[in-house]
Structure formats: structure tokens, C-alpha cells
Amino acid sequence: MKHHVISQPPSNVLSMNAVSPGGGGGDANYQQGDAMPPPPYSPCGAASQFIPSNTDYPGNANFQIYMGQHAQTVAKSASWTFSSRLNKLYADKDKSFPIQFKAELKQREQFYIRVMPVFKKPAHVQEIVKRCPNHTGEDSKEPCAKHLLICEHKQAEYCQDPGTGRLSIRVPYENPQVGADFTTYLFTFKCTISCVGGMNRRPAMLIFTLEDQSGTTLGRRVIEIRPCACPGRDRKNDEAESNKEKRLKDKGTNKRTKVTTTQTKTISQVGKKRKLNADDELFTITVKGRENYEMLKKINEALELMRSIPPDLRRQSSGIHRHLKKELKRIKKENSDLID
Image 1 (spheres, rainbow, N blue to C red):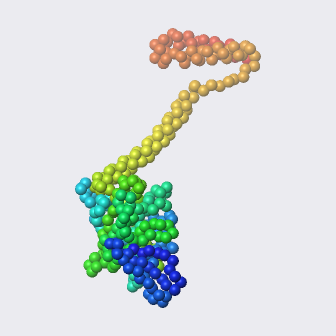
Image 2 (image 1 turned 90 degrees about the vertical axis):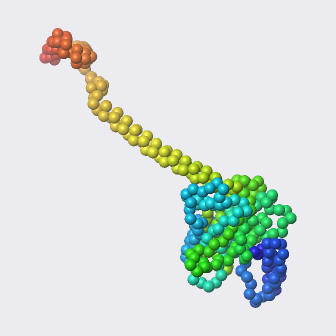
């Protein structure tokens, strides 16, 4: 594994220090005109962005990652697991887990895979994801001492962008072996999400980018991560919480639909009731002359009295009914005499 230290070289010398994970290393000086390995960073690369993109982009190379066969249930003692429903990786500290890569590349030049952890929430996205002080080791001279993630590959390079300070791993992309569709790399988390001074319970993601020798991004894949002590338990809890939120969301949608339907039905019923009970409406009539007013008032009182008697009582009290009709005829007759 290599660690590149970027510094300003003399005008006639290009230098790059390669440090092995064990602490030993050597300085290689390249004269102008000599072949020089590609730099571990690029101004257009993911690590050089203060707010790197977290959108999946397969690109022309159809860059893909594969986390293995999805398991519906997982044991609490599992050292790692992946939830395809949440697109989230759960892994224990110091326990290796495989990630498989595939790209459709026709050129013969060397390509690279860069893996960079980034905090998920906007409030923390510009902060650097690194190990906590307890897991870093103050006297450790290993190039990966601050990196949250390490890769078990001999040519892995542990990089820190000089502009943003972001930590990332770069490994050469290797074509799948004969009879295989993907190339497998082993990774390990060296810290947990609950460590104070490190992730500090802040959700994070891994951004995988396929790059050429100049560092240009050719493809991108993103997954969420949770380095934890009990991957199986945490995955189960997160999926249960996700299901609960989905049920509450669906319930809220159904409730709003039900309320709208009930309100429409009530308004419709009120409108229908008003139409059927048109006799309850009030009207005002302008009458000229005191006597005409008194006569119309008596007619109105008689009609009101008529309406106040229930239909059953009307049939039983035929005498009252006949009396009211006789009285009504008399009032109408008197009214007609006044008009004449």
C-alpha cells in the first residue's frame, strides 16, 4: 500500500514519496522527461470537491458495484450485512467485508477506483470523515492512520487532497478474472459511528468513483454506511423504523383522502336538505293598507296553526280540521270583499 505526500518540487525535479503501511518507505526522484506515476488527486476528482456529488452515475463505462446476495434476515452475530432496501452497509470494526466492482472499459490504459467517506447531512458534509483519536494512535506513522476505511490491496494508495483535506483510498481497477463478472476488493472499518471525535453518530456515505490516470471521474456509485458493533441488530432496527415511517405516511395520505370525502358528502347532504325543506325559507311581502295587512296576517297565522298539527292528529281530529278549513274560507271571503 502506498501513501503519496504532495509537495512543491524544485523546478528541475518532480518528486513523489511513497510510504508503506508499515512505516518504511523510499523517495523516488523523477527527472524531467522520465515516466511519472499518475497523481493521487485531480482538480476535477471527487476528493477535490468541497461538496462532492452523491448521485449515482454509471457513465459510459456502466460502472457498477455489487454487495453480494441480499439476505432477508441476518443473524445478530454477523460481522457485516447490506440492506438493499435502504442501500446501506453495516459492518463491525476490524472485520473485513467484500465489495465487487465492474466496468465496461475498452481502453488498455490503467483506471482506478477511489473510495471516499462523506458525511450525509448538509450541516456536516464539508467536514472530513476520519478516525477518532482513540483509534488513530498519536505515535502511529502508518499512512492509513487517520483513514476510517482501509483496503486490503497491495497497491492501495491512502490519499489526502491538498485543497479540501478529504481522505480517500485509490486502488487500481483490475479486470474480472476468467469466468467472473466482478472484481472483488476487501475493505475494513477502523472506527465506529459512536466514537467521539470521529463520526460521532453522524450518518455517512461511501462514494465510489471510477477514474482515469488524470483523475477524471468516469462513473460514480454511492451507498450509506454504518460502522457498528452489531450490524445485524442495527440493520433490523433501521428497516423496522423505515417500515414504520412508510406506514405512517400511507396512513396520513389515506386519512386526508377520507376527510376530503366526508366533507364532500356532508356538503352534498346539506345542500340536499335545504332543497327538500324549501318551506322553511322566509319571505317578506309589502302590503298597502292596514286592513289588508291584518287580513294577510290572519291567513298566515291560520296556515302556521295548520302546519303545527301533526298529520296523525289531523286525521283523528276531523272536527278541528273542518273548523280550520271553514275559518280559512271566511278569511279569504272577507279579504275578497275588501279588494272589491
